[in-house]
Length: 356
Ligand code: ADP
Ligand code: GN1
Ligand code: MG
Image 1: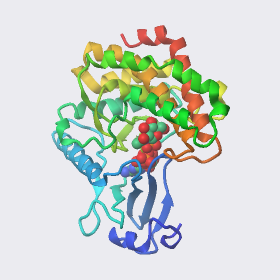
Image 2: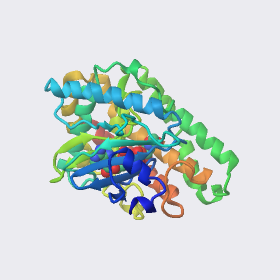
Image 3: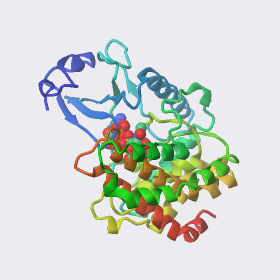
Image 4: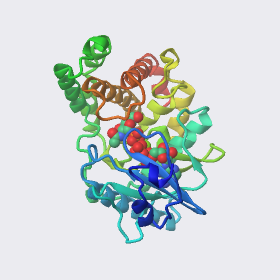
């Protein structure tokens, strides 16, 4: 793609970051929310993102959060307490962290020698992913959460996600309800999990969480065995560590991608769950409480169910939130999350024993 072919990365945008109009521009990664581009010219590379303002209306708050976290992690790194690379915002040549008429474009320094994956192949990779997010969480455990804006309020409020599903069912805006009645019924029958979550979290410390620890939001070294960075920090907000562990289980434990068209193969691999538990606990070190440790399996159930409910809600609403690339994409994603949820219930005593 050249600048002339992209409506987002125009010549003016390239110039703002010091690139000529001959720079190479290509779409990058598989995120569902932002438009991500890799811009390259000679030795210089940046990631440019068009922030989805429907989802992140306050881009100034988002950048403020990102810079505060960046500063904290860089300080830890300088003190030898953080071994990973730090995701850094890249200002324009004029020193602006947001550019464009809508103030929705921002750049990130490209993290060299890293790659993201969509499916975990072996326990070593799972351990590395969880160790990465564990180190990230540990480094933020003394970060002052009052410095963070709540960029998406109630992001992991399961009761609210059920209420949104119920609104979508009542509206049936695009006439899709009839086609997914049994999945809708299954989700609604699991509503009690919101109460269980509420009573569990009442006893847990609030932590600064990543809140989107899916497997493609960390980078492995090229050899894919060690983690080098936690990325996609836009949802860093106060929460509970069980959410971050749960999203790792959701996206690492299945041998199939999130949107697999082979649903019968979507299962929880216990050996991957065990590696995630070991990696996360090792990354966190001794700061985790016993109650938090015991809550991690609940986190896995909550995240599989909650993201399933969110995909299903979006399907019923006509695909307004998550980027979709084929018909019924959100429904297929939702079905797979519910399969994982069911498999967690089936294996829960084995998995809980792995958290001892
Ligand atoms: P989204 O919010 O849409 O998920 P991400 O920030 O996760 O966007 O970026 C999408 C993908 O782009 C990531 O999965 C990763 O592959 C790649 N990526 C993002 N930031 C960087 C970076 N700084 N260096 C290298 N690759 C990156
Ligand atoms: C979105 O941005 P991305 O693709 O990493 C979503 C997450 C979901 C995830 C499901 C801001 O993450 O909450 O868990 O899709 N991000 C936002 O794959 O809603
Ligand atoms: Mg992402």
